[in-house]
Image 1: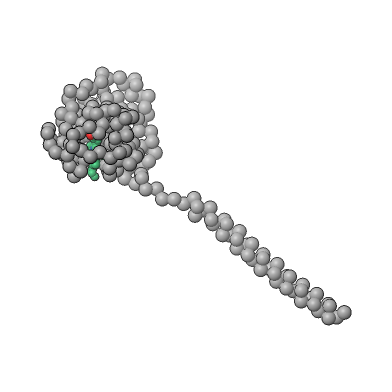
Image 2: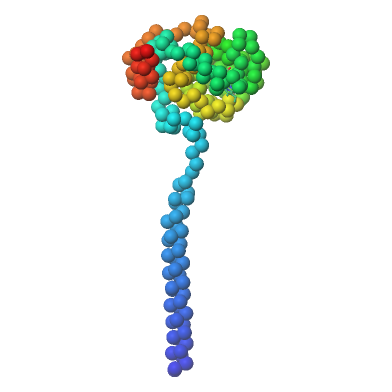
Length: 206
Ligand code: HEC
């Protein structure tokens, strides 16, 4: 009898110990599980580091070209071109392709059309959707090249600031694209785009 009691006591102690261990384990798991979602939810944002904020790019509506082009700062646009584009692009009339295609007359030009340039498949596919570098098309592309043409060979973060991009496009237009018409001003349409109106208003007030 007393032997059985002894056994029961030992079993009881073992069970109690087991429960304590289980309790500790469960507690520990609860702690780990609470940490786990934090790690799973943590991811690194790479794409938007070069800009002034990814949110701005998402609502980057083109300006009213008829309003902003006549008042754009072409000299400022040329400076942007010299500092950001000439490492990969030549833009002389009849000049060569470099890492990127020659950009003489690029505004309004058919996409992926410069002779001798080995365009990426992504850019060739883009040409089927967007046939030419219209004002809006080049504005979107130069704002975030790899977002607008996923897989493009143009490894360039983009010109984020609308005003800088407008000046740059005005400069590109002056280099062999003057035959591509500037549309008539239509400020009412521009004010529909919240992101465009400050730039347009600023340009118009110059
Ligand atoms: C690191 C090199 C590099 C830089 C810097 C660069 N580009 Fe490009 N660009 C390219 C390449 C390469 C292509 C061809 C892309 C493809 O085929 O996917 C290209 C294509 C283009 C196109 C399309 C032309 C066409 O014929 O369809 C335009 C427009 C353009 N670039 C403008 C610019 C402007 C403006 C700048 C400066 C703000 C610039 N690029 C900076 C390499 C560059």
